[in-house]
Image 1 (cartoon, rainbow, N blue to C red):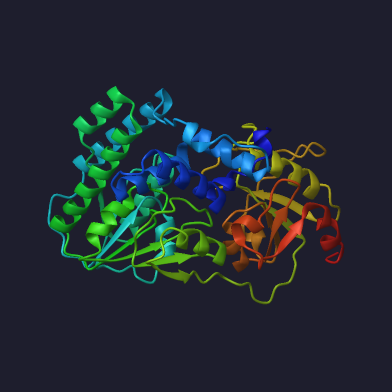
Image 2: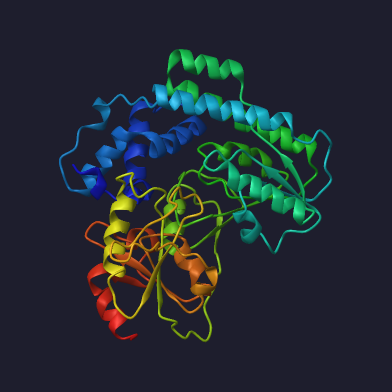
Length: 401
């Protein structure tokens, strides 16, 4: 099985959720329901063995019986990553505000995307709680700088994980001990928020966390909780909010599958007005490193090879905010293809594999999702978006000359 041919969003389908749900139901049938929910969220995200089962189902191959499996995700790499997560959360807690806060709105935040997602609700009566963002520290520092610039109240914040729970799990390597540590930390964090803040509303973008529903279930008796999907990705199938803003129907149906007691709403996306094509075609990149041999990188390189060879057009690559790429040169001219001036985006044609920016860049021009032999954007966005096969791009551009 060639993993570079398996789309990463296969983890974000009913097919994979169903695999994880059935395994947990077989192996942990009599456990507390919340612990089972966290296990499903955990295995959907972390279990390579269950993902291999899903891949075989996707490719219509024979699969092993789930009751014969004995999954354990608590390997050395996962332990190191978790230890660092606990440590960073503890450090953030040291610097959190010690005062009681009377602001009526709490915004759980990590980076700057919340400023756009909740812009209509942001005012001087908000408190931003900034949680650790380990993927790119520079991005979080720029976010904090922006909060200061806007004179918005904020505090560093973290979950108070128990050292005893952590040591118990590190010693036992039991997935159940790991889940109990997450359960206890989220339960405890809800009590901290209720004690220190007098808010009536909480805004967040935490559907990627495996146990945040435990925190929210406690908070919802006092706060109205709104979550906004911060992309078209589909993460933990078990979530708990009063309202959940999603980008499309495919995302809504994914979360409703196991979390139905939520009011789902659709995010309004921008639309370009008075479009006059400027001759620029731009790839909205999702790759963080073109040398990582990942599905996204391999598919994007094929797309770049297609787009850069069209005559009469200027081709650019718009990098992902977390990208490590510093240059990408055209072999013919040896010139850097990376977009160096955002002014070039107005009235452009944009292509992407399956990025959420498909919606965002509609404010600048016309956007297309690109289907390839292995990339199927319909699985992420549903059937009602502009999807074009890579082999049909030339016909599209021919009409624009």
